[in-house]
Image (cartoon, rainbow, N blue to C red):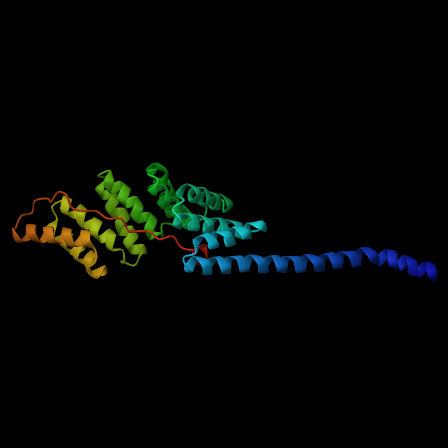
Length: 251
């Protein structure tokens, strides 16, 4: 009987050890998940209070744990650095986040483009916006708009207009800068009435606060009242503006 009990102990010992290890792993995974969630929650709270250094600390603490959250943490770190004006470091974090998602991180690609613009690295910025547009399936209004700006700067007005129209479609027609810039393009073709309509839409959507659209509209109306269909030089294009957000609200 004693030998039989000994053999049973030997037989079931590996099973008991496996169950113990499984339980320990489950507890460890739960604890890890709780730590990660806490870091993101506290990071977001600090970010919303404008405490970007504190938020940076919290998001970096999430990197102590492996997992798919690492890309999101890197993006959030980039956002904090962006807000702090540390653009070169932000660029590094955005690129790391994109790499961790195998190139498919729309929000990070767009933010990367904006950061690179501020560093005057326009070729790379344009490539980042193109990546954001492509990986979003052509649905990222901001990236499409920025690509329109680059095309317009090169006087490729047809391409620029196409990007602006696409950005308006994706933004549900709520992108005043795109309307303004379309007005500039139409005026360059001598289509003053159509240009006026775009400037009016831009000014209306901004509740009268869009100074470029206001100035452009005044000049356009002057030309129309003079019954001249000639082109107007020196109208003002505008950027859409950008404010980095927490990755908790990003894709």
